[in-house]
Length: 226
Image 1 (tube, one colour):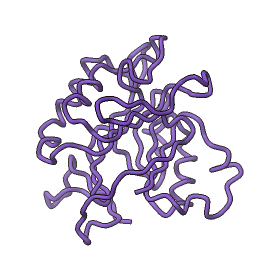
Image 2: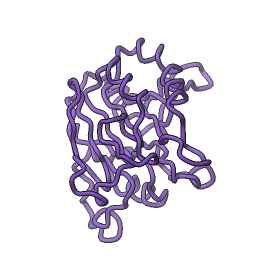
Image 3: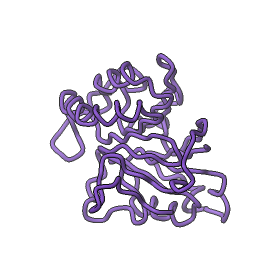
Image 4: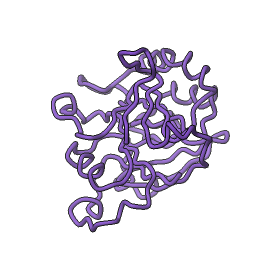
């Protein structure tokens, strides 16, 4: 599966100067936050795949004007074409405002999902806004990472964690990719493309975003048809 990860800075080549077909090669788009809702809506309209997103600390208007046609996975575990994806938006609290958490609060958010993670046998991709502490974060308090995310990596060993929040345009020495105990930690600032090995999937579940942490009125896992 070929995945386009985006975060923090809208890419002119994918919006202002978009040309038809530029998104055709991607099987999935993941937004790590702090992007214009209209940008995400544009991408999901032009692409042939879903756009899944978590909140960044600056996405204060998403509750009033969410990205149309996109799927919010913040605080959820979803499955798409067999790939298990966990979304954990927000950053370390550094001033009053939404989508900011203390380390203990982030730890609590993860704990609420622990039973489902165990039941599913782990997770393939973790989508966050802020990075794990010491693994792609920065020195100023606004860009510190979460120790709770390091603990998540230590426990579940996902192949991929993709994040935003730390702008590579601010410092060109910020690494795009870090390896930690078998997990690739990717900085998606503006855009970053990666691939993950396909997993078995039932034919009836192809091209559907299936929420494992949200139920429909029938009691079955909620899904978005594509």
